Amino acid sequence: MKLKYILLSSFLFVSLLVSSQTNFALNYSVAVPLGDTKDFIENTSGRGVTIDFSYHIQDNISLGGSFGWQTFYEDKGYITETFGTETISGNQYNYLNSLPIYFTTTYYFSPENFLTPFASLGLGTVYNRAELDIGIFTFEEEAWHFSVRPEIGLQYDVDYGFGIRASTRYNQVFEAGDLGSLSYVSFTAGIYWEY
Amino acid sequence: MKSDKTMKSNYNILKGCLFFVYVLLVACYPNEPENVEDFDLVYTNYAPEFTFQDQYTYSLPDGVIKLDDDTDENEPPEFIDTNFSDAIISKIRENLNAKGWQEVNENQNPDIVVLPSAFNQNFLYYYNPGYWGWYYPGCFPGWGWYYPGYSPGYVSGFKTGTVLIQMTSANDIQDVQVPVIWLGALNGLLQGSDSYTISRIDNGIDQAFTHAPFN
Image (cartoon, rainbow over all chains, first blue to last red; front, side, top):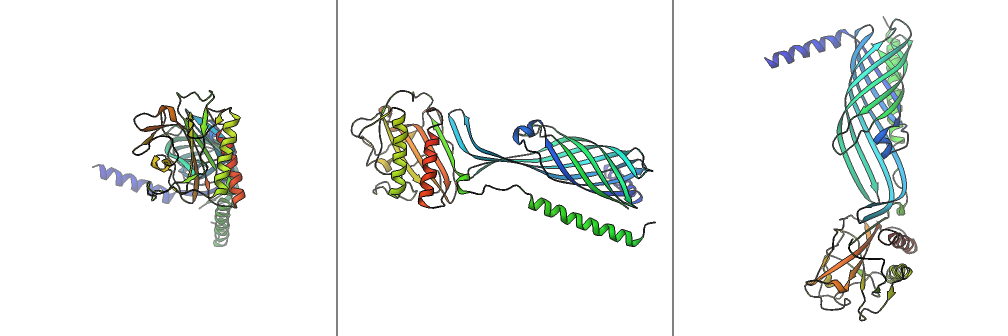
């Protein structure tokens, strides 16, 4: 019975995708660390990319997915840290690789115009790998976090089925495992295709 | 209805953009440390109950022994190159004298016996004290180390060199166990000229004496 529902849902979902207008976007992303992310790495990351897919279920509403990769890095310089009776000194380098994966729903305020503001909400997960290098040694932690990502932006239809877009995203990343709330705000600029 | 020409043009832009993103991510991936000394590490640990601020007498051997898992404890110890050995010993002496400690011969009942050693692979905190049988005052067969009130971290690696300095309290030996009241380990890549390596070792030893409990 359960299998029947799964098959039926899958069939409906695939039908929806095939019959819908599909939007594919490629974005460059600059991210500003917040909270625990900022405690670990203060530098703004200029190394990010996201790929978004969305399927219009109505002219002004789409469902989709978003995948990305953002790399944060900071050379902490020569540091000395003490833990109880232990003290360690050396050059420290911190890295954070963040891979967000979201299901998204997007609302387009004026889809009939060339220039369309939109608002989107993503729900999903972020895989984080935080790495602290000191001397020849690496201390690594990784976790899958639950995450929510509201987004607002603009997209402009340059040519039929092709346009440019820009947005601001707030990646709220909740604590997981030994990693804290590694949140950040990202500013994206990209291009999209519709077919 | 969009034309095939437009579609093809858009796909070409897409391919170009994907390539651009790939180049961007690869080219901009964060740099690793570039210099050998960027990998140098100084680690210290100590017995919390020991009062380091008091004035002590200490002894230092003339050489730095080379630790090796394969060395038979009954064989005479092997020493590292005197260039490095002299630099290590004189730097330790300089730092201890600066603390007001007084160097004495090992046969003059020193409070602290300082044991410098070096090795180039696994970190051998628990190496056999028999290595020091030729030097340490008193009987040695069957003796072991203990680290009172603390446990040293474990470090291992390849193509790296480590200088391990142990300070032992000769007055507190219990049941043939030698208390190591302080240890300092300098770890780094085994690369560069002798003078470069010596300057890195000197810096490392100075750094170790800025750590607790000497700071």
